[in-house]
Image 1: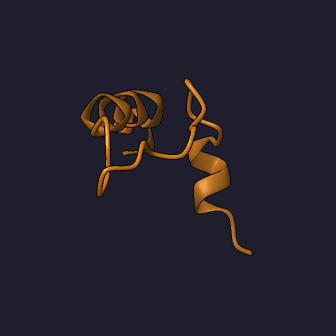
Image 2: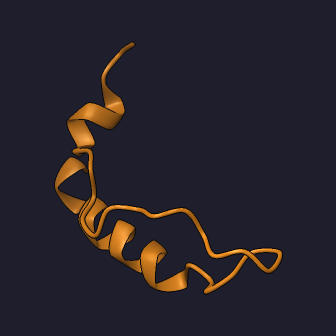
Length: 45
């Protein structure tokens, strides 16, 4: 199941869905590529 998760693709989709403004303010800057891997997301704290 892990191979079916496209974290960079999901991140890219989320960036494209990001609005130009939020309550009249531009959103905070975000990285162009996903800053974490699936393993990092699933790691225990």
